[in-house]
Length: 92
Image (cartoon, rainbow, N blue to C red; front, side, top):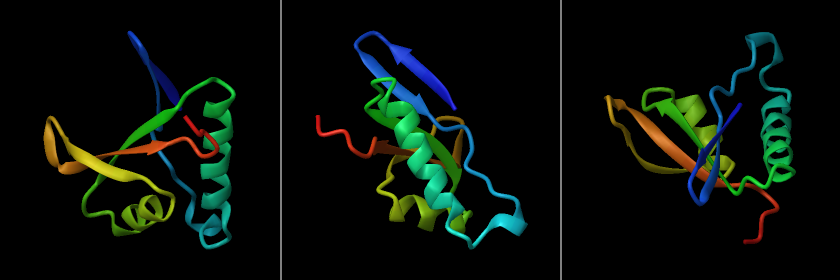
């Protein structure tokens, strides 16, 4: 994870959600999302962003389940969507 800081904006950026195949289907991805939220929340990060290939249907379903919303296409690759999400537990 990285934290992107712009004047007046603090936004976290998730580089990659990935579980090796032998760990999939165990609910660990949900735990990973919870970890990301906690990590960002204690650093006063309110919004998160990530990118995902539009063809990665498994990832797209995961992101939808966890409240990520598509906000557009990657500037350099229209086959890649940009997603944003408010950090869980943040009421502002």
